[in-house]
Length: 131
Image (cartoon, rainbow, N blue to C red; front, side, top):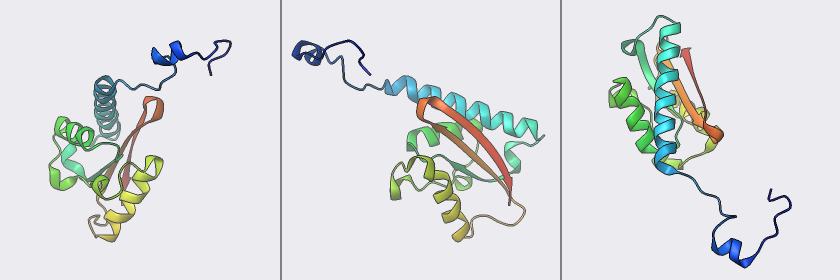
């Protein structure tokens, strides 16, 4: 909130009350954290990128998805993307993508799935699922 500050035309002209996102720094932070947490999940489980059958990343931004998977060295055919179909569905993006990948028979029994997310306030996480 703005607390004791009064809203004025001058303050609005100075854009003091506008929401602003530093896109470039947010992009860099998201990529860095998603890569790091993915590596941590794999290392903790004594697994490597080669063990992954499919990656289902949070569908926030195609550029972020591409940058993360490129830095991890994951081939495009192991990445499930549906952002072009729905846009950013926020916290529903992983469940929607997981369902679609399953329905499309892209997930084989016993395969390893990497879920990796970044969200509001720059929260992030990763999970490995053996299907």
